[in-house]
Length: 393
Image (cartoon, rainbow, N blue to C red; front, side, top):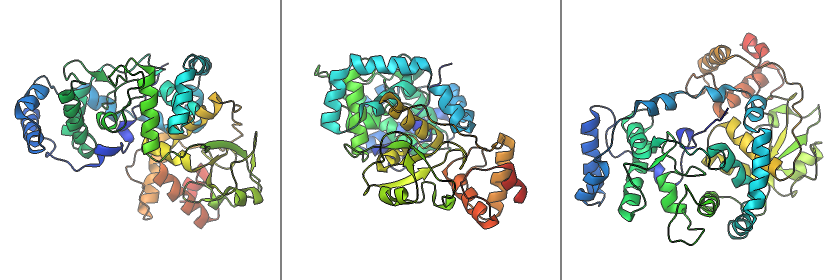
């Protein structure tokens, strides 16, 4: 089963996506389009170019349906990672690492991003370029810009696509990609392409759909611009002692690697990173499940995707591609069903915690609230919600 995950759908994309909304969302789509043309002109674009750019645009109900279907993020880390990291993806990834060795060598020299990292993104986003999405990119971006759920993420990307159109690098009628507007092998938004696109093969065009060199070097350049630190690790499986203070785990707490080592944290294979690096201990399924140490580069992943489970799986897969063993799944306590998670979120919200949308997904804010309530109730504060916590609340 192929799973295509849209980076932009949950994400604060790099660069232009942080700009303010230009046009009021909702209402008639044709009126919205006319206002987007006016906004483009106000931003300095030629009206005739803008009119040609928007001439074929249509509202796409399939994009809205895809945007609302995020049930995959309700899976546990073990379920999610086992589903995405198939033997075929491992074998195909290793073949690509050999086939494109020269590109990866250049990428590491020039941008300092490890080859496993981009290969994992390449695998998860498009199955190594095999399925890049068949949504009309402009239709999707305009549909999500018109929708009032998150127009601030997508309207700037429409204007970035217009800029690519003016350069001759985007055809509004035929350009296709993922439902959230990403393009190419590693799924980059138009604004990311403008800011970080690299002509890796030297043919004078940044072609993220057909050129592995362009796609991989562009992705690496984007990660570097987002803060990737050359030569440093990102994630590593660890063994943690049974008497660890569980309230210190999670992304909200960082300590030096040397401090974690003094508390008994050990690498499951190899050695921990440099002692002076800041790091957090991640327990995706609580103290009885798998355990990882997350270094500063791990946090850069959240600029690409904001799903904890997706990010941790992508980061872990990158380590597997570079030789790490299969993680020890442990024997975690049973988690909650989707309905129970929603009930838990409602209880947490009633206690004053900001968990965001009641969606049944164990996101960062829900994890933080769970950990606080576990500590208050005298339960092991490992941020893993269980029936015991739900009952105690």
